[in-house]
Length: 81
Image (cartoon, rainbow, N blue to C red; front, side):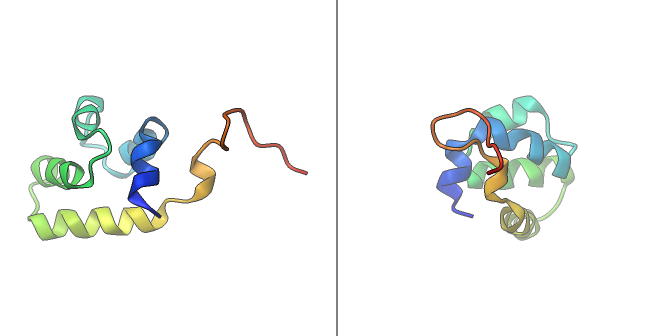
């Protein structure tokens, strides 16, 4: 997944991040505001892990992001055809 897409849909992605990293707070994610490096730093801080481990976790999580997490262009909800 393109990180620019994640950053552009930050409000939608925040809930998924809280599922993955429960020690992060809404305030943490507001500070991160879609910036990948900031996210790794907050994970490192909250979980007490090394920078390379935090980066690995972000990269692994990033691979799980799918298009169905995001609203379709123009807003609204998707309807099956």
